[in-house]
Image (cartoon, rainbow, N blue to C red; front, side, top):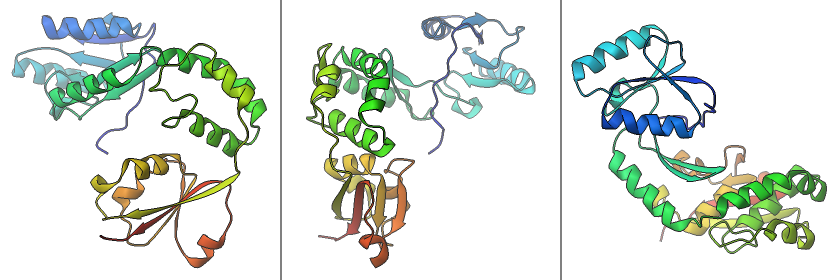
Length: 258
């Protein structure tokens, strides 16, 4: 992973913008949408965006700002960037950022357009409804693993809160009224055709994203294990580990070449 994706809250905070023209105007519009206060080079700010066409001017401004310990984005110069600007899918409050670390803005744009077509306009309202129901969800599932499992099942492909399907304003309330706690433990076995992560099926990728525990053969490479949730436990599938009963979803990974 070449960069750590983060979302910055910029409302009411200064962000430096250096440059004029179409690129600078586009960055200014983006900063305005985020509620940032756009300032010039002489101001005090933690972030700066440099939108200049001349490479020598880019180098000079970048050197001055970096000496001031300001994090930089220099348009079309990934070699000078401390952070890059992703292509954005905005379904407020749901935000999806697609980035390539500056390798290809065109590719990021193409992927964003695919996602735009996939997600219904109302998915942001679903996020707000889940936020408003946070206390009720905690009361319904006091145990964190049960709660996470219930939410995962509801939001899964074909689930009652499937974010790709159109949802009305009462969907979350109906889910809370009808949902059961589900099984406390569940085991799924994934037979991998190869150690190449590009060969993962959609089902395998989904289960890895949901798993609380991943038990894996020693031959399963890190490139596949990294597809699991960051907080999922990763254990070698010894006889003792396989025999233990664990709450939540346990995924067993085995390589069985075709």
